[in-house]
Length: 480
Image (cartoon, rainbow, N blue to C red; front, side, top):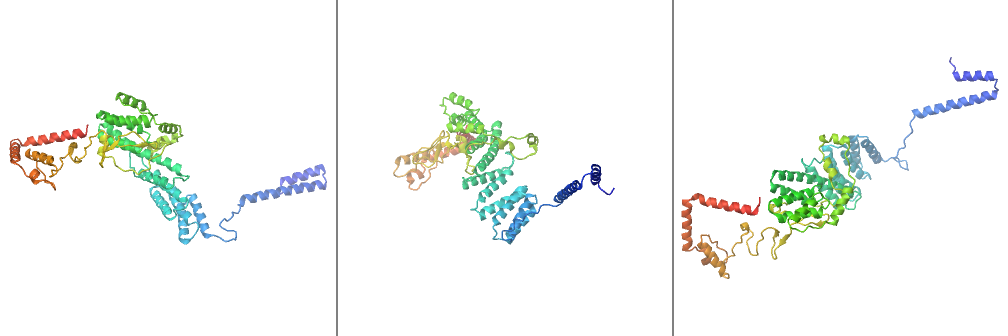
């Protein structure tokens, strides 16, 4: 049984068929060929192909910095980030003149970025910024700036939570677009900036809507004016304008309400609020503006632009995520985002007068037109009381102060004397006539005495009169 079965069969067949020696020789050669091919296939299985060492140059000299760099990249690719960063740092410290020095610094930051986590993202941002400082003229500098912004972008919270990372991302994306406007990565950065500003605008809009429903018109107007002025590409900007128009219409400021209704018709012609805004303007007997062709083209292109969709798995796990997924999908896909840094310059005057002008699509929109008195330096929004030339701007309720009584102005001196006789205290002004305004007459003394006696008889009367005057003044300025 020590012999194989195949030779036995062949010998038996050869004997039976009485084959010649030539046939036996051919069969033996065929068997040897089969055994040789089987041995070669087994050898290829157990022996791997020898790798080529790319670190060896044409002159058979090994580059140690290249060896370290390749080894580090392979470690990072396989997830061994700490080992890869250690090899890269060894390369930087050992070979300060290496041609792979800049790539090593950038790879360290990329390693932190890929590993993820709050601490690693902080290290990645620091590494990218160091690369920009040391190598500002390399082509990779724009990539490093975009990575800084993207690191903040990935750490953004929902609109109703901490917005620190969103503000940082907005600043970094704006910096990228200002420094590298023609870079191939500029379209990606612009879309990211639109998404960040959508999140920021959504946060302010929610606060303004809360106060609007609650009935606090001033607080609602302050938030909504800021949203419509700074973020015209916001997906709910038309709704914010409608709420502002309703606020000022109910506050009997129809001239301001018509401005916001007109903005809906002109800058958001495809909005669902456009028809209602037209009806409001016609009811107020105000001309209805024509839709801006640029706004029509922008809204049409934005509606036809493809948007990312969330799968069933992402929707089911969306409750456990802290990122603003829904707001990112609702962001505009077309249009120039705001490039100016955010400044909280919404004052009480803006709230009471409906805000200043806003821009959308590169063109000015219809807003409260600020008029400047010839020769004056202060702007007076339309719809408010403007001071006449020569009046005191600090006087309450727009009442002008009397001009100083000088020798060259006898009428003013007489007016000042009459006020002194009525009980007012005359103030001495440089260059004034003491006899005209600084000395009280006997009539003034008697008026003061009468006033003092009345105050002693009814001490609460003066307080009631002053409080009623203050209330009237506040109601005159604030209509609600």
